[in-house]
Every structure is written in structure tokens, then in C-alpha cells.
Length: 261
Image 1 (cartoon, rainbow, N blue to C red):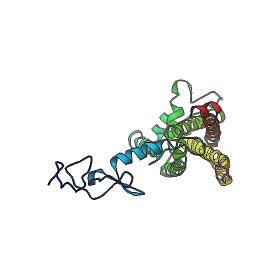
Image 2 (image 1 turned 60 degrees about the horizontal axis):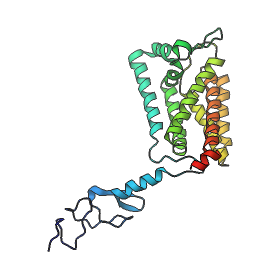
Image 3 (image 1 turned 90 degrees about the horizontal axis):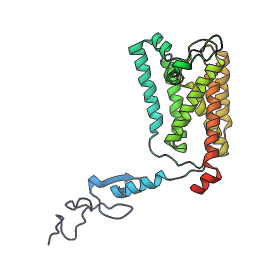
Image 4 (image 1 turned 90 degrees about the vertical axis):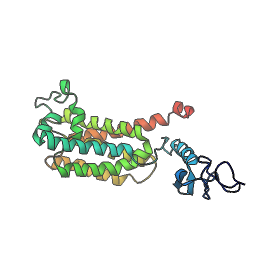
């Protein structure tokens, strides 16, 4: 006797594709699942429906800091790296290094006025995507990947993006307030914000934060000694990153927020 699904009455068929016989069962619900519906998982093969349900549940996991964790690839971090690389290729291949620096960089006025604001407010953002050579962008993107891969899953994608953008703006503000002349650019202001934010996270979790503070402090000191390093952007980004991280922690753990959760 044959079943209407295409197999014998005793043969297990895939619920989503009744015309396909499958002897592989989902490790969560136990239903047969054909090759098109099989999803690899740490527990073995699970069906598409169980995979979607597991993904929904994982998105709502609240970590020890009170943030909703982000699982999977660090999409925001990789996107920021892609944007920086694209800007670098555009600057070198289309505009040329000198024109690129003049059009995108932060150029504080010698007389102490806010040189990067006013009608050219966009420089506060574009300067964070300006790099002076392959070593410059290479080092910044390496550190961005390292810290982004740690912070993005902890904070969630939108919070991490907000942290990066506000740290970038903090670095630009530091240049505008403290620098006198020159063309400033690079993602290091935003990256120093990630440095400081990561140190705050480690301190909050009662983990070893001294090594991160020492490394960030060393690079900050080098900015005062080594020509070409914008200590103003580093300092501004670090202050902004720490302030933003403290603000996020205060908000997510506030009594009002806790009651809503």
C-alpha cells in the first residue's frame, strides 16, 4: 500500500516535502527532514522550522551586562571595515591622496576657531574614513576587527554602531578643540573609543582591564611623541567611548528599564 506522499505507509516523509522519503530526523522535534530542510547545528541535524525557532530565541538572550546579545557574524564591524577600504580605494584611485586629504580631512584653524565645523560639517565624519597609506589603514582595520568582534556581540549591532559613530565624532571634536593646523584623518579616534569602552566592559564584569588600559595609554602617549599621530583624536575618541559606554550601562540597568524587561 502506498501513501499519497509518494512513499510507503511506513516510510518517514518530510513534513515540508511530503513526496520525499527521509530517514534523517531532526534532533529537536524528531520529525523526518529531507536534505533541503536539514540545517547543521551543534546538536546534529535539525529541521528548518527548529532552526528558525532557535534563532528567534537566541536573539532575545540578555547577557550579564543587561544588553541583548547579537549572534552570528559581526556584520556592523565587517561593514565598517568594508566602508573604510572602499573609501581608501576611492581616495587613492579616483581623487588622489592630496585631493582626498584636502576634501575629507579635519583641518583645524590656526586662529583657534572651529575649522572643521560650519559649512563643512561633513568633515567630522569623512575624516574618520581618511587614511594616509596602506600601513595606516591596515593597522586601524586590524584593531577595529579585533575589538569589534568582541564588543558587537556584547552590545548588539545598533548599540555598537552608535558607540563607533559617537566615538568617531568625539575624536573629531578633540581635533577641533585641541589641534592647531595640519590635516587630521583616520579611524583611530573611533578605535580609541572602542578601546575605552572595552576597558569599561571588563571593569564592569570584574575582569582584567589593566592590560587594555595600559595598551591604550601607551598609544595615547606615543601620540604626543611620534610625529604624525593625532593624539587629539585619540584623546577625544577615548573620552567619548568611555562616556557612551557608561551611559549605555546606566540606561540598560536603570530601574525603569529593568521593569520594562
